[in-house]
Length: 365
Ligand code: MN
Ligand code: MN
Image 1 (cartoon, rainbow, N blue to C red):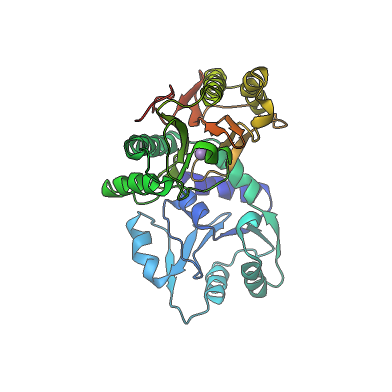
Image 2: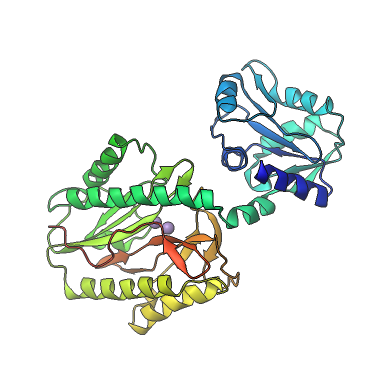
């Protein structure tokens, strides 16, 4: 309820009467309950001065109560009109309906129109998205515990992936083997499509895992993550099969130095842009600057699309509880690609990683 109270306080400060929240991840963040009802309607309604309620498909009601939600929850059947039922529940509470807050980043236009039809005299201009982004920027101790467990399973996945990566085995087979091992342990969801890229294929940082077979004397890049209780991991390692050529080994060495230098330097009070520059300078100095073609890192937590963004131009100061990736990469088209990534959380003294798989070049043959 602490997070919901923060929304209530925000409503009071911003002259909002109530907030209509239907993004499944936001509802999970605020209540602990997660379900993606697809086209059905799941709505959390938070009032300034009254208890919130959840409106959900009838088939979800028991699961919501099971999470310990003690405020009202109302179910609807598929043939009923959810928008009218939500409006009816709000009107019996006799609250002001002048200013309604919505998540502008996560409310489809057809849903906004359905709500506007129920509240024709209300304004929907108050945007809750920036406040939620601000709240999600700093993780609580409980959230960091979940991120640590997700990180532990990413380490497990690397171990299984490295065992599977052999000459003649396809990238797809390696990805399948490591995900199969995770499922056997009860980890059913990856945070994004597992990336296994061998040799020159790894020089396409947004390429996909393919039918490409691993050959001797090349690097293989892994980028993967798991989901634990709504929180993700995201980590990359690049390993060697046999003896890769000198160029590949050199870019590995430089990328590793950039990653280690940045991870050791990250601390509260530092600008996000300065951290990016620390890694970039290492790669520039070695002559590979033009091949480091993305920001150093991104915020993460429930998703990989959170703040802070670790890049040039972002002068946000790092603070304890911020979580983000440190992932320099060097991609030389036609030759090889290397990325080394740990996600970290900022403490009073520095940065602690969620993943602990060795970053020294591992030879897996
Ligand atoms: Mn990644
Ligand atoms: Mn990442």
